[in-house]
Length: 459
Ligand SMILES: Cc1ncc(COP(=O)(O)O)c(C=O)c1O
Image 1 (spheres, rainbow, N blue to C red):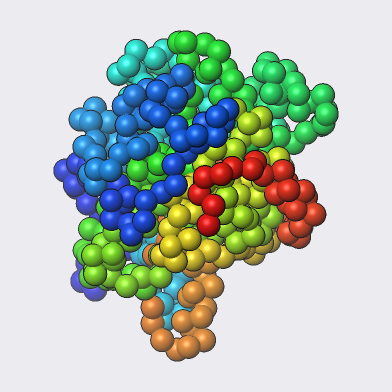
Image 2: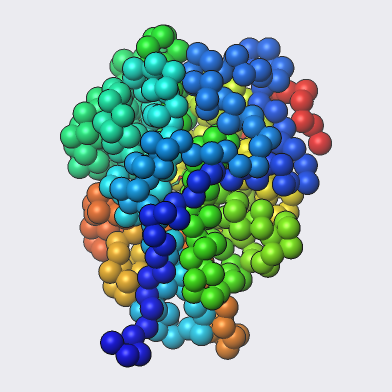
């Protein structure tokens, strides 16, 4: 049809990236090393061996710029990759903005989000080293579903600790994981020492990612056949997500565009890093000029209100200490519906990039996030995951700023997942039951007061 507007910028299967992109060698300063939770000295690869396969540990500390994607992983990626880049023309018109809005849509993965990019890779490297079972935590259920599917594809067992509030809010996510063959428990559970310790103090605890991580790590540490898998935060997880940004660079070129701003929501930092790091690497080499914006919930503001310090990754203090923006490992965030953003810390790599001034961070309240999600659904037809609504809200802010200035700008954001299993939160929103949460200043101050005293990495 003559005069049809292009909506999707798609790549052929042959353009699924051949390698993941590691930005570390391109950054002006190295990352602070992770520390052993017992000795508080920098970790060696062997310290991580009880939890992770060596293939992933080597990626965690790698200084290589490119890490080849194994053929079988790339083949599984082909079930849904390359994911589409979509121009949100209908949203642009609804907002009457001169801005051009693009989104990379990761909700086309069978599990519903970007999490499958790393789930497949992690399961593959574990299976290579003979591991039979993976234990993990899940907040929103997106990560658990992704790992459950990856394990089903690679013939492994999967054990998931699902944060209590999400377990209650999202029974269909649990059913999806069980359909893929995983065993799912509400966290805190009676099945681990860490879970029992929390329940003894808070019998009605809503749970948190920090608690669920402790439970999964404990299960993995005690069973030689079981390894632990983490859905975000660690370098190797962020690395696997860089297929998103690499594809997006090619797709923006197809559209003949250079982004002025690139946006991602941040829970542990993986979908944000996956989209932005390839663009940032390019910018550090003088190509492109985009502002890079991380969006976090006002109720759990690790990047904007947290401290950049060494802290534990979990509530039970079983994990190594990493230098990151943190609200304190004992902070239990309010029960916002964006379960995947309820984490006290942030990826060390994302924290580092913010600290270097290479990216900025903003917060969005729950009601603004859902208003944006509904607006997006009505014009683009996709109901975003509550986490992704934070990125949509920030994209809309930029589009409206462009309108106020009367100047065009090119906006790119990561629509990290769909919200088809999160409809209860939309029901609650439409019924006026959702609320904004104030920044829980006192609780955060208390949690930060308990930060471990560490000699390393002091500014
Ligand atoms: C759809 C979606 N987006 C974003 C996130 C936040 O995680 P991350 O910051 O690692 O991308 C999650 C986490 O569960 C998620 O499910």
